[in-house]
Length: 216
Image (spheres, helix red, strand yellow):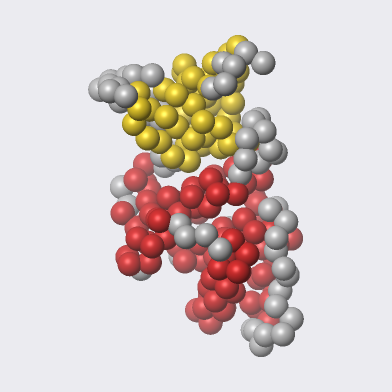
């Protein structure tokens, strides 16, 4: 259907188009993952310049044409400036958006992935939560949301706290995911399982992860 629509979402990636335009990928609540053109967004002072930056979250006004979307306006609620000012934090965020981009599709119900992405970027800015834990939670919950979680390993010796944490991540709503911390031993076991599951189930190389792992 052609016409103006409003969607709530987050910018997953952006790229230059022509001399002044941008092409953006937006994960939306209403239409899943979509691509849109933002005319003039690379011109200094253009009202869409900041709204088309990575991590920008808010309401986007789009013109839905026959085969593409064009962004005409935006009202951003969170730019996640703290991540953009933190080199390592920015790469954690970029890794999360890459996973979201990999998993999501247009016209699918991607509300849970959008919520997970938003809450995870917020968690990266919380001093009480170590970034490696946020990463584990995001990776594991992404697999859960997409129906690929194989469950807690039954044939592996794990700390009881690790088993409880895995079950909590799998069963809890996104809004309650980042309400705990764990001991180093548990974090180490979570990292091993998350790494194994991401390799075996997702099996995709993410560019930002390669850079992130040189920083950590």
